[in-house]
Length: 239
Image (tube, rainbow, N blue to C red; front, side, top):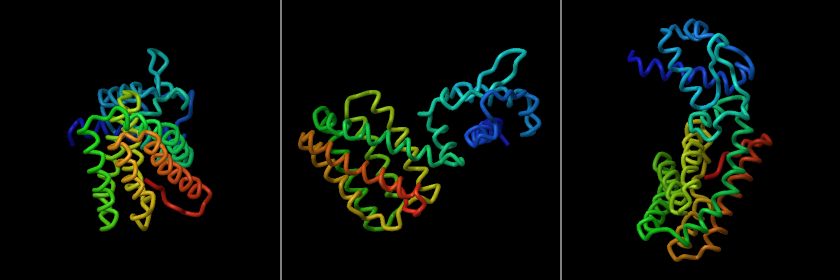
């Protein structure tokens, strides 16, 4: 196995353990522990720890070791950290936080996009909305996820707000994880999906209030479905 692949496995294994709470805040690890657990060299163990340090999950000090940091210190916007949390026993908290973040950001991003989007971005947004709708009607789940992720990426980027644009990775990770974690709705073609066309049309025509309202309805439905699912009824996540 190539070093890069092995290194990635160690990072993923430790990240999942951290997200699951198997390694708790304040706990100190030794590189020897990592080597023994994964059967890797000291070089691979050290590089894996450096990746986790870059995500602020751990800190490393000479003669102290590798200390697990509290979750409040983690880079919670890191796509890999999001994925680890979504596959952990703390999945409910991560789903709720992502839903709340989208509720706060996406309507504002849609309003800004209606004012500032370039003609190309307006065309792209409409194209992705149409592709999303077509995929939903035909039951094409892969096409659906691809178009959904592209739609929200373009919407956030078209806002002209660089900080909003970087949140596209967060939304995309949620949408991809929904597919991988079997959280897709049984019936793809629903009013929430069709509201993407409303957002795209409002942005294309420069109607900022309508764009915000339509985007708000999408994320509100997604938030409500998250809450329904967390309450144990098994309702899947919306787009």
